[in-house]
Length: 114
Length: 109
Image (cartoon, rainbow over all chains, first blue to last red; front, side):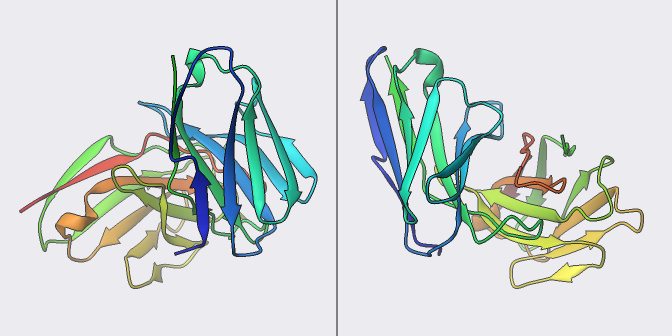
């Protein structure tokens, strides 16, 4: 299994509070991704990173920011959580952007915003 | 965006082969086809990928149509542990994985 951990694994928070989710990898992979998964949907890309301090938006980036100050860590921040951000969040990593590059996924963080 | 079409659900008997179809009519010549599966309460797990020719690995086989507009994931002997949602994805020259809703495979004992 790829060395990917996510923390916390579960979190309950209130609307309007900031929340930070952490993804940590031990594979020294260059690319890291944050997805969310909601009932009736597949995974949708929020943000991704192609190197330290290099990030870009995915298809559902509104309300989220990210940071990557070290190769091994990719943080996802909800500046002011809303109930619509209740979801399961998955981090993924890959060695490169080549089309054949496999992405490896973490175990997920289940977030409930009350 | 790269979009795939899969049946919502399928059933199989244990120890029988399973053929999971996927249509990807928007695929271009250099797009790879990836298959992932997601077990309950887990992140997606890589299964197999290919470009043009059929591919085999320890988990499954991937059969790609000659025109590449469809593919089939083959589990040679389904087990109860294969019950999962299976996703077929193709990229379009970018980092983007566009997940559909996948096929929920039920394996009957």
